[in-house]
Structures are given as C-alpha cells and as structure tokens.
Image (cartoon, rainbow, N blue to C red; front, side, top):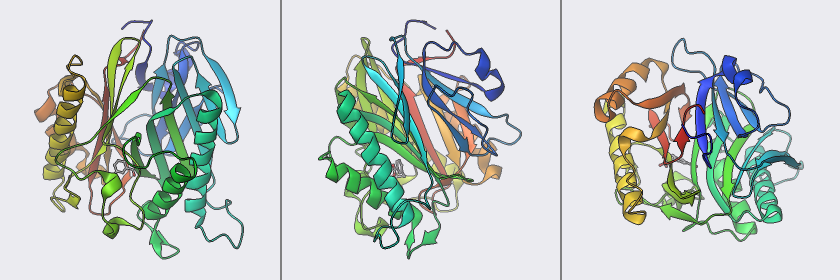
Length: 342
Ligand code: 3EB
C-alpha cells in the first residue's frame, strides 16, 4: 500500500494499535464489548461499546493521511487535521445536557450540541464540507419522552444543520446511526476542504424526504458522498438497509434483507460511477462494515456477502441495533482510498 496516500484506512486488532505508524494517524475508532480505552491521548479515537462477531477480539479502524497533521480540541471535539482533511470525534453524556425546563429531550439536546460544535469547528478552520459521520448511541430504538430515541436524535441533528445554515437536503453528509451497548452519544466524522458530491439511490427515497411516519424530522444524510482527494476518487457509502422507496422489506428474513442491502449498495455505486466516470468503483474492492442486530445472524450475513462479493471481501462485523426496529442488518462501505498497512 502506498505510504504516501492522502487517505488510508487500516483495520487491526486493538492489541496491535501501539505498533501503528503514529505520525500519519488522523484518528479512528475501536469497537469492543465493553468499550476499550483509546490508546493515545493526543489522537481522536472513539471507544465504542459494540460487540463483535462471536469470539472476535476488539477491533480498530484507523484513518491515516500523508499530509502534515496537527491536533486540536474544540469544546467536546478532539480532532486532527491537515491541509485537506480533518477527522474529529466526541462523546457526550446524553443525560446531562439541557436545562431542567429545556423543551428538548436530553438526547435531542446532546445531538444538537454535538453537531453545533462540529459546524463551529468546521467554520473556524475553513472546512466547508462534512464528508462522513458515524453516529453511535445506546438504546436507539427505546422510547423515552414519548418518542423513540432515534427520532429524538434526528430532531437535534436537523436543528443544528438549520441553525448553521447548512442544507438539510442536497449536501448532507454520508452517515450511519447505530445503537451501542452503552456509553453516551459518540460521533466521529471526516471533513474536507475539497468539493464533495452527494449521491442518492434511485431505488430509495432520499432519507431527507422520508414521510413523517418515521418521525417528526427526517434524517439528515445522503446515500453516499463522493470526493476527489490527492488525485483519487473516493466514495463513502452511508449505512444501507433493506429499504426500498421508504419502506422496510423482508421483515424477519435476515438473508433477504442482506441481499436487499447489497442491491442498494450496487445501485449507489452505479450512481457514484455515473457521477465520477473515471473512478471505476467496484463492489469487490470496497471496505465494508456490517452491523447486525442479532449476533446469531452473523454467519448468515457473512455467507450471503461472500456469495455476492467474493472471498476477498474486506469486512468487519459488529452487533448493533439498527435505527428501525424491523431492520436486522445495515451495511456501510467506502472505496477509492488506500486500505491496509503502509
Ligand atoms: C435508512 O436508510 C437506514 O440517520 O444517519 C442509514 C444511514 C440509516 C444513516 C442516519 C440512518 C442513518 O434510513 C438507517
């Protein structure tokens, strides 16, 4: 792998984190149950409480860049940035935010606070484009304050976009939102000074146009984000589920849901290739992250993916609640960046 890549994703067991080339680290996340403490104080790392494929050791995703990097902190955000890319992350207690008479629920308040801090940081450092956001918080499908927590999150997130005059439709970042086993609201993000193109899926209604049956505010994300960095086209495909139009398909059938996810990803990738004709993105060369609601479905999902994509599949499998109670699996992916070690 080129050591000089503008952006490289390294996936490794947490036990090997200390051996990672430090100077090029932008930041990352470690997934384990319980959460394991991130290694370096100076680097933005999320410790996410999310169980792995049965018996799996704690796993880390580390984003690298060859750009000269510096670290910083803005409110709750720890970040590292170069000339072109910024990686940041934050953890907020979703109980402590909000005054007693605040009309917002605590999670809604935490989401709004988090995204406001992100936009303040991006404005201050001149990073106009939020490229990719990972949203993690516990009990995502649980009802509190007469509303499912995912829907509360959507209100706070959208309010922050609106109050920072960021479009909630045509320039939304690629994203995912998953339930963790514990902790507060945890968000990691990649932002860039380069131009980003948002990609939608012709098979799916844009999430920002979902009807109100899925909550009072629609989710603010695009199906994928395309960007050209260091002369290479890169794609970030959002968490993708068994949804066609705006409806969940294949209730209680994890195999069929997995196939539908892959069809959606193929459709998004075709759109990305249409908008970046020289990119030549292929399903076989993407890096996948797979969230599965029920640990016992892991093998079914894995074999369905290997069947569709091939044995060279690069994927990590995590057990997480997906943001609609009827979804059993959600798959995200990225491509075009370097992948692996130096
Ligand atoms: C969906 O398509 C499934 O709220 O940021 C996927 C990706 C989903 C991102 C988010 C939610 C989000 O609606 C759920």
